[in-house]
Amino acid sequence: MEVENAGERHVVSERLLTIPNVLSVLRLLGVPVFLWAILAEHDGLALLLLLFSGVTDYLDGKIARQFNMESRLGQFLDPIADRLYILTTLVGLAWREIIPVWLVVVLLAREAVMALMLVYLKSKGQVGLPVHFVGKAATFNLLYAFPLLLLAHRDDWVGDIARPVGWGFAWWGVVLYWLAAVLYAVHARIVLSQRTRVATP
Image 1 (cartoon, rainbow, N blue to C red):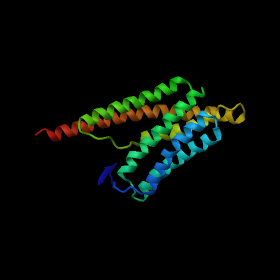
Image 2: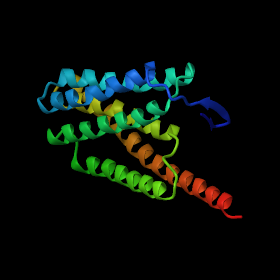
Image 3: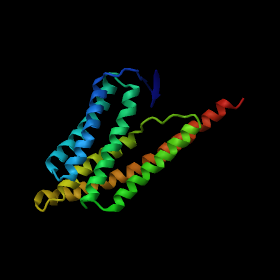
Image 4: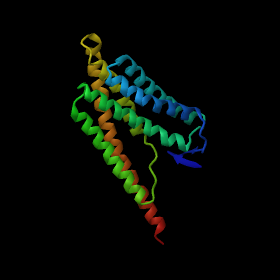
């Protein structure tokens, strides 16, 4: 299937075994290990898994676009892996009182809004929306913020440096995360209005 994005045509295949899909599966397999590591206070392993998640998140998208390996499975797995890492990190860091509860509430509220939006779109016959670069930028910022906020928990010079940088990424991530939700809502309204015009004789 071909989809058009920003004036470019990309072929979205039905292939399952691709390098980007393997990377996405590895990221998903790392989620329960990461949650155990963060709750058990094995911070070194948790940091490595967060870094692995950030690197593979970048690589799977880059490889998919560069070598025409975009697939339906990849489009399904990638956002799930992103959200699971964000959710498990929020739970782990909040449980250990490294991040405040309000940050968890703000990010989970955005996820709830997106879930309701997708349910509404599905009820109208529209299955999902294409990933927006603002949403990916928000995810990158949050995935950079979380390991830095974990390091900020240290009582040494590393923590002193990581703290302001981590919160800088976190604030940008929150703002972009909600901005992406607004853009998805605008996109959804445009898509639905176009479907209505097509359906109306």
